[in-house]
Image (tube, rainbow, N blue to C red; front, side, top):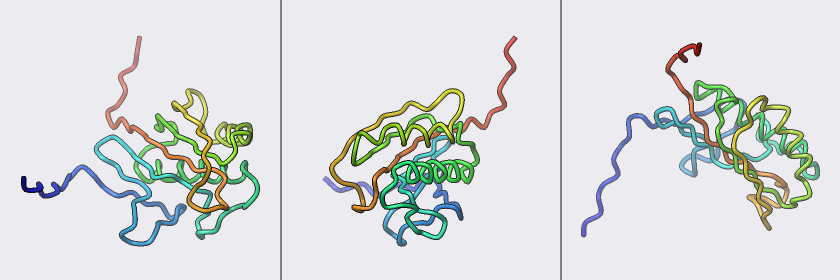
Length: 146
C-alpha cells in the first residue's frame, strides 16, 4: 500500500518567543498552535541567552521553565492561565516541593491538570526538571453568566 503524502494543516503554526531559544533548525519545534490548541515540547531551564540557569537547584530550574511556558503561551496569543495540562519530569521526586513552589509563582487560581513523573535521565545530565504543556485558547468572547 502506498504511503499517503503529508497533508499541510493551515491551522497549524509554529510559535516562538524571544524569551525562549529555539533548537537547531530542523530538529523540533518549541511550540505549535493548532487551531485553539497549543502544544509545547518539554521545556528545560534555559534563559533567553540559551544558558542553563542552574546545574544544582531544582527550584531555579522549575521557575525558569514555567516562565518559558508563560512566554510561549503569550506568543501563541493566550495567557499562562490558558494552560490546561502540564507533565513535569524530574530526576528526583523529592524535588516536588521546589517544583510546586515555582509552579505556584506562575499559575494562579484554577491550576492546570498536572502530572509529576520521576525519571532516570533527561536531555542533559544538568537538567533536573523538564515540563511539557498543553494549552487551549478560547478566542470567542465569554458570555456573562447570570
